[in-house]
Length: 159
Length: 113
Image (cartoon, rainbow over all chains, first blue to last red; front, side):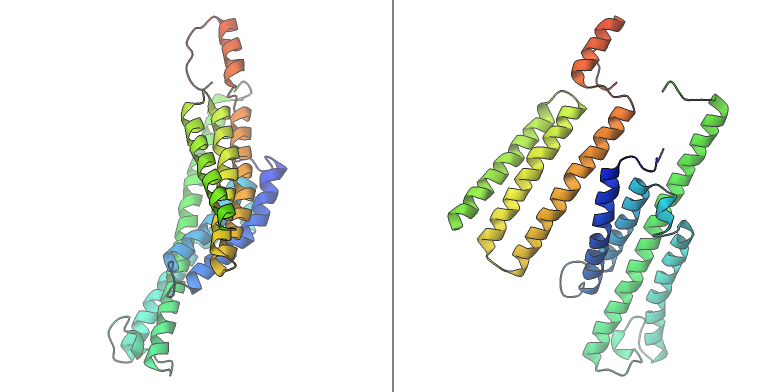
């Protein structure tokens, strides 16, 4: 289904484009509270850069960029960051995600700024890991089907 | 300078309109992807260039120039991959398809392979 080394053109275009997509994703994440964007959109862009490598470079060669086994841990780490910031505010006597009770020793305005940034980083991690692991699960399912078909039907030379 | 920008924007929208007509009316996959790629790329480039000239030298015009670079890289490469996948999976162009169908004796001019 996914053949590596289809053509050198897409290969090199992807190699040029992926770092710029990732830089733009970080810009969207870290600039999220001043401009449109935020954690979800930036995380979706990061996942898109990984999926572009998966589709074009092939499932094996793209493991260097983002291994399949890291998908679920990334999602869990993002949720942990989000919930951790929320409960850190509760330790100081505030409500869940009440940013001006975060124990960082800044003025409340900067505390809100930092808290929103941390929460958005957590959301970005969660979205990246979840989207990549969804794609990997679907592709593994399909590849298992291909192998079963090949074992049952023999060669597919005439296709 | 502002008339250059307006001319580029009109050219870009005209090219995008032609691309939309081509995608709707051309007969098979290859001609349609041709119509979706070439006028679209040039139309978007000239539209964005016109907007950047209209805006002057600001941050958003630099972003538009970056969009131009990105589109000029990504759009032809994506269509290249699509066309290559289609020809490798045996999808014939419309002229070859008519020949092979008349040779095989079938008169069903269905779409696809």
